[in-house]
Length: 198
Length: 189
View 1 (cartoon, rainbow over the protein chains, first blue to last red):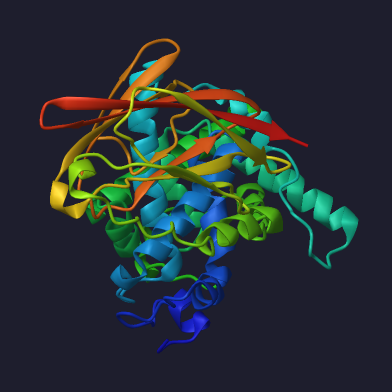
View 2: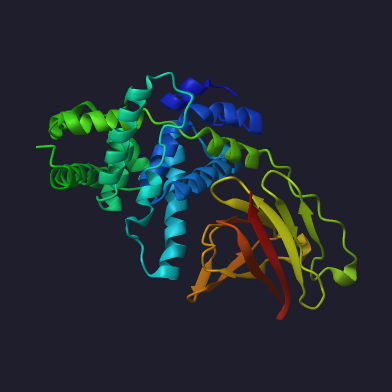
């Protein structure tokens, strides 16, 4: 491996810099997992689906580790895989159910214990953060997926518009407009659902 | 949080209200559950399917054998045999939450060239990797189809919960078809 995990996360890796053995791969991708998991949660309708998606993405990423060229961030590359996986799943599911965008049936499941432990934070602070994250996820799920995905990777994960454009394979102008519209929709949800964000 | 955001972004969009910004910060602090990542990495460490035994020329059109490997994710090795359809039961221990996985290698001979594989499953089994080339679904059952290269790895199927999950696998080549039926009996402690 030619790059440190931190460099990979920052997008300073190089072609072939992702570990090819299970151990090296795990070491390299572990720092990117929180971002990937958040993306999966926002992308899917239930925590169980997010768990499954994360696992599928990691397996696929391991199988295609050689394709990570280090030009973008590792979390962006992983989110791109998650997005494609999700589209495939949605394609199959839509044939089956005729509904691409299911109702918020799994939302309660998403809203389970979001902070999985291992934290040194004060329990009260922990609970408050959990409530806040939960509220945001609920609100994001009220936003159409095309906007929601952009909001997650730009506003939550901090990717630039240009990297979001690469990850989602969408022109940068579209990313910018979806970002702006997504934010507007999100604020509408906060206003109507929570009575805030004036 | 360190971001890669374009500097001009904030100039284009009004700052988010503090309430939303605080919720965003809370979401950024969220980590992936340890049990989920542990299961994912366990899958990556799964041993590869055992090498295909060399087949006699007379049997080269179709591949034989069904092997179950007991591993963290219950690796299942499915082969297609030159026999009449019959059903096998495979036990799958699901994790305490979430889905379990079975792995179905396309156990084909390279010299056979590309083949068509059809797998009929319960409609709830939508998490198939790779994604099918086509799928036809009724209310309860789906028929998924792949045109596969014999060198391709195999199929992963997520089993979402306890129960008896029936699979019918049909392998079509040179106009003839062989069917294999099996049942995954999934349980959760």
